Length: 510
Image (cartoon, rainbow, N blue to C red):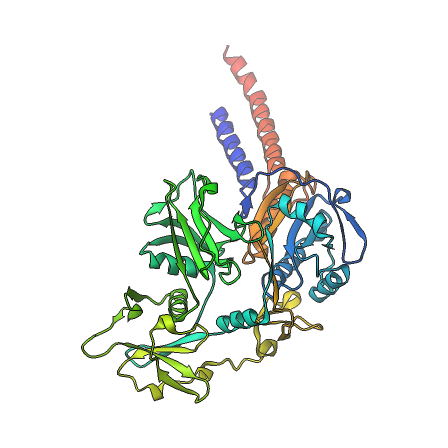
C-alpha cells in the first residue's frame, strides 16, 4: 500500500515539475546564437556584444523618427523593467538597436532615451555594420522617402471618415482604416472568399480561407513585398500591425509551401493581397486607387458593419448596410460629398469609384433631406489631451501620448503632440522584440507592439528558471525541479522510515 502511495506522490511531483517548465507565451524560436557585434551607444561609447555579462538579453529594433510603434515598444520595455525585482534586473539587459542609422546618431539616441526616461543601451553604427545584425535577427528594413504631396495625401486619408445614416435617422461616423486585418477582409470580399480567424488579446490569427483551415502541420503564413529586397519577406508582426499604406502588398500562404513560387504583386495597384493555396495555385485581389469604394469598404469592415457592395459594369454600388437592403421601388442608398467651399453636403454626381478617398462622404437613404445631414466638424473631438492631436497610453512613469498621423512628441515632453516636420520620411521594418538566453540564442520573439508587459515578464521569468540564472531558491516563478527534488527526498525518507518500522514485525511472524 505504501509503495502505491509513493508512486502516486512521485507522479504528482513530476507533474508539478513539468508544469513549472511551462511553454513561453511569446513565439518560441529555434535559432543559432547571435555572433559578436560592435556598435556605438547613445553616450558615444563602444558597445561590444560579447562583453555583455548579464544572463538574459532583451533586444528591440526602433528608430527615433517613428511616430507610433517604436514609442510603444520603448514604453512597454520600460514597463517590463519596472515590473522586475531588483535581483532580476541584475540578470537582465535591455538593448535597442536603430533601423535608421543615417539619422539616429548617438546624440539623437541620447535625446530619445532621455525623453523616454530609460537608460539601457541604444545602439547605432554605419549601415554596413547594421545590415548583418538586422539579417541575423530577421529584421527587414526598408527606407521609404515620401514627397510632401504623398505624405499629405496619406495624412488626409488617415484622418478621413464616412458618415452613415441608418433608416431610423441615426448618424454614425466611421474612420477609414488601413490595418492589415481590415484589408485582408476587404480584398477577400472582392474575390468572394470567406476568411476565418480567431481573436485574442494579441490580435487576429487567420486560420482559414474558403474553409481551408490550418492544421498541426502548417499555418497560414503572412508575408509582405519588400521593395528594398525585391522579394517576399516573412512578417514578424501580426496582421493587425501591418499598415497597408506603408506595406501595400501582402500575401497569405501555407507555411509548408514553397514561398519562392509566389508571384510578384501588381506594383501598379495601391494595395494587393496574394493568396496561395496548399496546391500552390495563386490568386490576387487588388485595388487600383484610393477611392470612395476603398474608403467605404474599409470603414464599414473595420467597424464590423455588415455591408453589401456590388460590382457591376458601371462600377461599385452600395446595396445594403447593416442588413438594411435597398428598397429599389421607394429608396436607395445615396452618396453625398462635402463641399469645402460652400460647407454643405451635395448629392454625388458620380459613383463611389470616381470619388477620391480624401473627400468627406456620407451615405444615407435617398429619402433623407441632405441639408439635414450633420457637418463633419460636428463629430470632431473636443478633447485637448496631447494638444488635441492624440490620446494617452500607460500610467504613472509610462504615461505618454499616442500622436495622430502627422504629429509627434514635442522636444520637451512625451505628453504633448506637435506637428511632425519629418513626415516625408519613414522606415518600414518588421517589428519584433527578442529574448536571448545565456548562450546568446534568441529563444522567444514578441511581434508587433500590442504585447502586454506582464506577459513578457512571465516569459523572462520562465527563461530565468530554465537557465537557473537566479540560483536555487531565488526564482519568483513556479516551483521547479528543486522543489520536486526536495519533496522526493522527503517521500523517500518517509518510505525508508516506514520500512524500518515495519520490518521487525515481519520478522516476528517468521
